[in-house]
Image 1: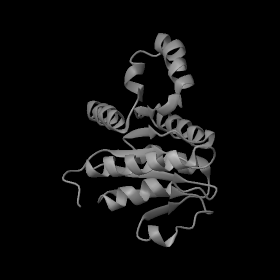
Image 2 (image 1 turned 180 degrees about the horizontal axis):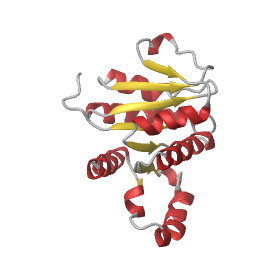
Image 3 (image 1 turned 30 degrees about the vertical axis):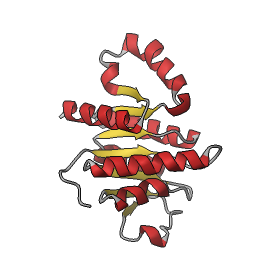
Image 4 (image 1 turned 60 degrees about the vertical axis):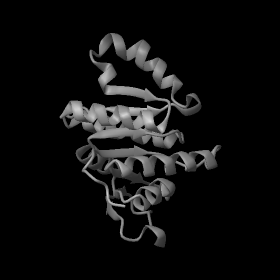
Length: 186
């Protein structure tokens, strides 16, 4: 099925490594399908042999476009043949490239590595003069510490922080928030 309109270009940070693998894979699949059916173009970071395969395969099956920015360790499995992949040898270059391409950043519950990558891309965007909005799926309170930080630390010192970072409770809420923030930014 082909998306009906061009939606936002979203960098999605997800990992299925570590405890809770099966549920993370399910969330990635749900997100990939839901976002692709609404026309979103997804960007994924693939490093150290880790590729968010459930996210990518679900998005593609729903007719979505996916682009991967990767390090040299990444070899796409046959199921991902045809996916555009740009290999950049330096992590800072990968972060800068994602920040350059993304209109918004989405974080799914995952590993500490995916949270670090999200922060790296967000920081690269800020350094480039863009302020990509961030929405985190707070499933099972995965980002509760970040939510507390946003309220306690960011809110007094960063006017409009609620337009910079938000938290969602479901995939549908995640889409609603990120699509609204991206459209408000344009």
